[in-house]
Image 1: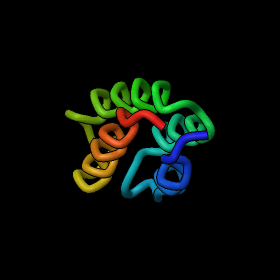
Image 2: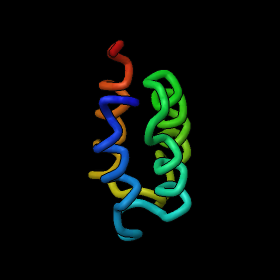
Image 3: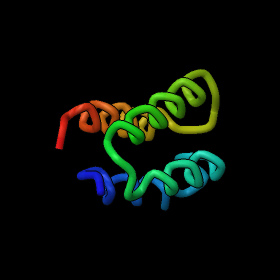
Length: 74
């Protein structure tokens, strides 16, 4: 279990106006994963969303902050 599980669940529940549903589905699968897996997958999501309309700037900032937290060892 990751310290980010609650935040990941919040991101997974985000409305489509904030984060595209295909991205929220990927985020939902991260709940319960290790920080290493969360970090890797969120980095991939951030790259995918970076130059697209899959996530709002606010959502991208939250994802970026989650990546930083995931780098901290439990």
